[in-house]
Image 1: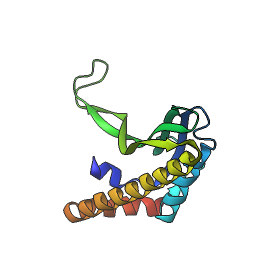
Image 2: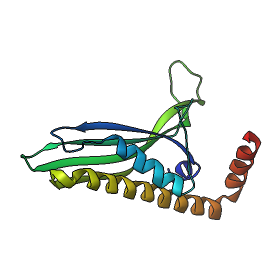
Image 3: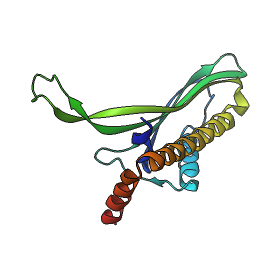
Length: 163
């Protein structure tokens, strides 16, 4: 999985707000926080979803536990497509391949506490998730460079031809 994640460097960010009771009054700030941390770490952000995108999906699910407190679960995952073999498909020849979505979860936590501070805590959590994605991607890239440097050379060559 790491070698597949290592080569991702352009993302489309989306968020899913399933938080009620005023616990997350500005859900779009989750997307803004993720975009900011990724840009600061050298990643690029796609303005629109392209064909076979690298999608970062941030989901917040929560509710007020009483008039003053909330419980919110925040999760971040990277969804991208990979070319995979389909050895026993009925409609395809043996050994054929297809593109399939791959999900890589890089953050998830449960937050509880006061309603008035929950927005800031969710934003800080999303920032930590973005930092974590950068760290993991960097480590995966280092491992790939150590074991298979030709893959990174090929990837760099492909990117330079696009520009």
